[in-house]
Length: 519
Image (cartoon, rainbow, N blue to C red):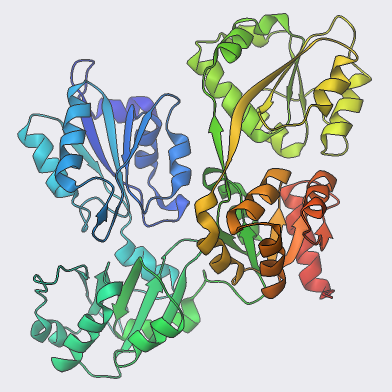
């Protein structure tokens, strides 16, 4: 999907804004449609919900206004009438507004209400359907919603009721022979199961509850209509959850492809928007990612220093990147500043490792130098051998990076050490992190900042060390710098990757599983 394709169907112009109601799918980053992704890439305003995969936000263009309006039961970041008006006001300013909703906009997503509100006020609206969790959730749990031998239909209901509006007709529901699916009904599981039983639905009807469907923390409890509530409680499932009732649940033992096998859970601590590559590598090798971001990467934007460096880009002879984040953010800022690609004409590129080199190649540039070891000292010493006194280096990187690299380079030539982004700690993740550790056999640290994030998010070094020991988690350091930081904070280093990359971590974990060399 490209820009022309999307806009040709939009009938939009510079004077009239428009709203796209976009279904983001149920949680798995890969389940959004190509057309939905194209809309995000062109959004001037992005209004998003609680249950969308935050990795999708990374596809919004630089300068896009992002507004969170998530709802959780009765706790609304913004009430629905105000969301409707917000969409109207932003579109009235002549802007391209994307309303990004979990699942499908029209399946219990209130997209119809928003669309009618806008249409009545003259705002053009286009819907881009999404994959609904009512189908995808059971599928990821190994449960087909229909099967010729046991269900020729399926029926989807909301399970989220107000106390005075529990209007399900259980007498009719109990007579249906198809699969019954209840969304958003975890808090009302007792009401649903008791109602069906009282209406005559057989007590031995197979049932399942799927928690956090299609995400890396998906868990499923199976039983019967009579005991599913007890089994879900014993499994300590949490909302959001989907309840499935019918014989199709019996297919799960043969069709469950997604949920983890014991001993193969790997905790992913990276920024939520940048975890996708690591998750994919793990899944391809039959390891199960368990995601709990403890850091968040935030661009500093087009600061005066960044603007000046971009305007003077032709004055430099070397551009050095120490992370994939540095490449992505620099190129975003270059575009935002109206940079001219010809300014790269005489530049040489240096990268710290293969992952950074691959991202750089994605922007059409090959690396002129990459050290044998993916550490800043190797990068600095290697470049020091080739730099001349008349060279000039631009070093765009994290604001928390140490000064050793720039000090090594400055011994040979001038260096502009340019902080592009900050690394924030997700301190609100303590309870979630402890829960995730219970499902993780391995905890890889991909940078010193993930070590700091893990320790600070969970409540301190002593608590971190105790939690790792209690859950018998094996720790993995991506390299010596990360291992050193772990040791400084009192975390045991069980494994250290020889190849300082995500592939190196994955290969090391697989070797450890295969060798069964646990202490």
